[in-house]
Every structure is written in structure tokens, then in C-alpha cells.
Image (cartoon, rainbow, N blue to C red; front, side, top):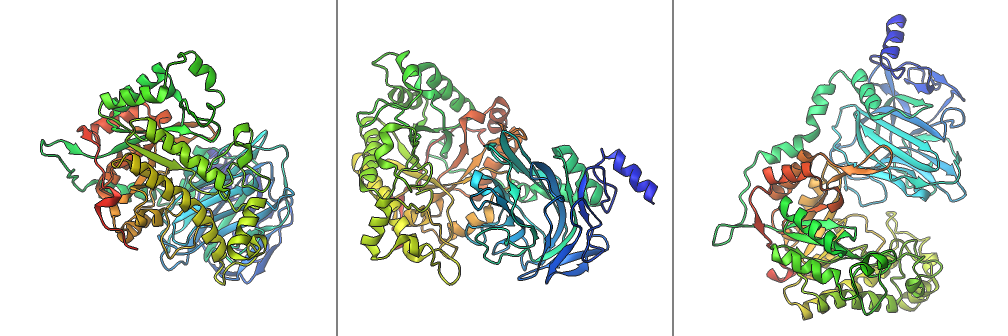
Length: 626
């Protein structure tokens, strides 16, 4: 048996044996939990400290059961190399409903010795509202190194998890479920490699500085830590070698999608039989600001079958049109100089789009602010969240509202889109502290230390944040509609249900839709597994269900951190799914930069086979429930 296992190890590139894993030359730590308080192998301390965790039937032999107040710790030194590595394990949940866990469940966590209370965690749900159904790898929170996706777990079924990471000039990490790469974090610049400041907490969030008692609630088996980064193929082969039913599990990956695609799609049509459906495409670049770039963008939109273009005109570092209120964006001046003084890129784009039956909805990154762009200096103070303007400064709110209304007033636009419509954190600036004290007669910093009994943020802080952002949304809505009564107002966000843990950045799209301030609430969901359970629930509570539109993604983050186009067939299927599942205000895709010929062919052969005219269910089409 030992000879067979050793042979299997080498056949699989020194990664894993057939069945229960064994040591390889790259193993730093292996625990199959057959010895309750000691690892099978450990380069460092082999002791496993049980804090209420108990042995239980595992995938093979014994496993380790964890739950509320029951976890285990593993020594970090020697057993995990911070610079690079792979961590893998199997887990079977005890959640009442594994598909919709209802609250956060933390698989593991540890603290980073980075001088900033950094941490690493893998958790089904994290700080976002309960029931959001996303699993998060937050590898280094201080470097914003994280990735997440919607994961459907099955009660009573073992799931394989793998996390890989590597520090260099930049940090990147990848997350895998059942041999499939869920995502890769953006590459984050880092000057040093931090050491671990805590042991590895298995089944607990105690490795984080703001632990709230989240536990994994289930059984672990076969935890492995390697000294190198496994690639996508190797992780897949580990899963297949250890799971006899791997074909069945992999076939279920898109079952949720394919079941809906079996349903016929009956689009709305006008009196002449033409399809009525808004098909929006977002563009974060400013390639459209030149004559050649605009023509190329419009041609691409038309070829793919889109009829709504959402080009970014404000990204927090200057205007992408000849504004009379603020300078042109840094880096765009020279490009525009070559087009001539009289050229207006936005006017040109609107003209070209309208000639092809395409609407234009300029996109504003509302509260985003580049600290290095001097004209915004008066709106960014010490204590203002990183990458944001001070939303509690009335002068900023006045400036950004007038900037958006300038575009609505000067250009024949069909809509406006509000992104970064949030504070990006809780500001500790002098302006925010004074505004809070004046509003509530209380100290903001002290209230930050006083969450509600259930762990939710202090209600006064939530209201303070919500009111500042709502002021922008309401004023833009009223002002834009006074100028152009038929304008469509949309926002980009992550809507949550009223009974979920409230966000603390002032982004309350559910309320804005209910109040009728916005026509469309784009929910940004760029993975291949859409959170359709949640969108079903939200639409049932909206007086105008069609307000919610899923904004799908058409890109994949590659292992080297770069971004590349997603498979065209998958993109087309996601759009077709949304057509059937969430009818009303159409479909949307992010972004133009990843729209390639394969995606265009798949869209035109499938969901966009017939051309369509834009169609909107406006906020004034129903009486808002207040």
C-alpha cells in the first residue's frame, strides 16, 4: 500500500496521492485528524490545540468537528510560509441550509504582523449582510487583497477548498472550490512580507482583530499546507484524485444556469414586432473621447447587439468632457489636443450612438477622489476614507451634483449612471466629526466603539452615512428630471435586504429605488455563479421588481493578476439567464474592454439574436411604497 501511494504521488507531480492525502516533498503540514491532538506531519510544531473541537467521522477515517465556541489552533511558525504556499482541506457543513447559510461561517483565520492589524480569513459570508451567499477569501485586508463569489454548498457533502498565495513585488492570492478556480485577487503592491502574528485558527474568526464569534459549523478533514503555489491544473488534479464523484460534482457547476435556460424566452415587443429590451454595456476607459475611439466603440456595440452605452465620464481625477466647472482628466489633455480645440468627445459620442439607435448614459464615479489630483484637494481631508472625497462636506456634495447636472443640461443624454455612490468607509475627518456632533450631540469616534447588541453597526452612524449619500442621489434625481423628464437614472451597487446587516457606507439602493429616486439598480455580480437567490428575494420586496438589473461580468482575472476576456458561451448564457429570470429593465454587461469577437458571436447567436430597442420601466410607472 505504501509503495502504491508513493507511486501515485509522483504520477501527480508530487502533489497528492490517490484517496487520503500523504506527505510529499513540498508538504509543510498534513493532518488527517486520525490523531486527535497531533498532525500526521509538521515542519513546525505538530501539536493541535483543541478548543472544544471534537473528533467526528471524516471523509476518510476521523475528522474534526467545529461549531459555535468550538475550534482548533495550529502553530503557524514553520508550518506555513508567509511568502508563498498552498493551503487545502475538506469540509462538510452542518448548516441547516447549506445553499443559503443565513449567517457567516469562518473556515480559518490568522493575523498578520504588518503593523496595521491585518488579517487573513476564508469565510462563507463575512462583514456583508447575512444570507448574501458569497464566500470570501480576504488574504490581506490591509492590502485590499480579497476575492469572493457565490458558492452553493450541499448539506452533508464534502467540499474541497484550496488557497494559494505569493508575495513578491506584488501580492496575489487565488481561491479554489472543488478544483475550480473561483477567482484571483488583484495584484497588490507590497514592500515587505509580513509574518503571522497569531496561530492558524481552524473554524473560527479569532485570528482577526474584530472577531464576532463566527464559526465554521461542520467537520474538517485532511488539511494540507505546501511550500509552493499549485497551479490551476494541479489543484484540479488534487480534487479529482481525492474525490471519486468528481465528474458528477463538476457537471453540477452550471445546473442552476442550465435549468433556467431550458425555459423559453418571450420578449416584450412593440406594435411592429420589434423586441423591446435595454441591453447596456459599460466602459470604464476613455477611448471613446477621440473620433477614432468613438467610432470603434459604437461599431463594436452595434455588432454585439447592445443598445445602451454607459461610458465613464468622471473617475475622480478630472472631466472627460470640456467641463466649465472642473479641469480635464489628467492624461487626457494631450489626447484631446490632437483632436483640435473645437472637438467635444462626448457630443461626438452621443451623435454617433443616436445615429445607430444606441442610448448614452454617462457614468460618474461619484464619491471617488484621487488624492493626487489637486483640484479635489479641498474635498479630501486627513481622515477621509482612502480613495474618496468627503461626503459629509456640503461643498463637495454641491460640486458633484452640479457636475452631473452640467452633463445632463449640455448634452442630449438618455440617462446618467452613478457608481462609487458611497462613502468608502467611515470618515474621521474634522468635517465629519463636527457634522456628527452637530447632528446627534455625540462623538462619532465613541459611537464607532458602540455597535448594537446583535453586532450590527451603531444605528446613528448608519443614518449619518445614509443621509449624506441620499442627499446626493435625491438632488441629482430631482435636478436631472427637471431638465430632462424622461431621463433614466441608474446606480451601481450591491443591494441588500431590509432585514440584513446594514452597510455602513451610505449605499442604500433598496431605499433609493423604493423612493423613486432611481429607475434602475444595477447589482454588480461579475462572477460566473450569480447570487440569483438573493435577487429573487429583493425583487419580491420592491414595489417595482424590474428596478433591479444584474450587471454581469465578461472578464476573468488570470493567475498573473491580469484581466482577460471570459469564455463567450458563458457570457451569452449569463445574459440569457437574466433575460428569463429577471425581466423588466433589460440586461447589462461590464465591460467594453473585455468584449472580444468570441463574445460578440455568442451574444448574436444567442440572447441578442434579434435586434432590440431600449425599453425602461421607469420609477414613475408605479406609486412608491413609503
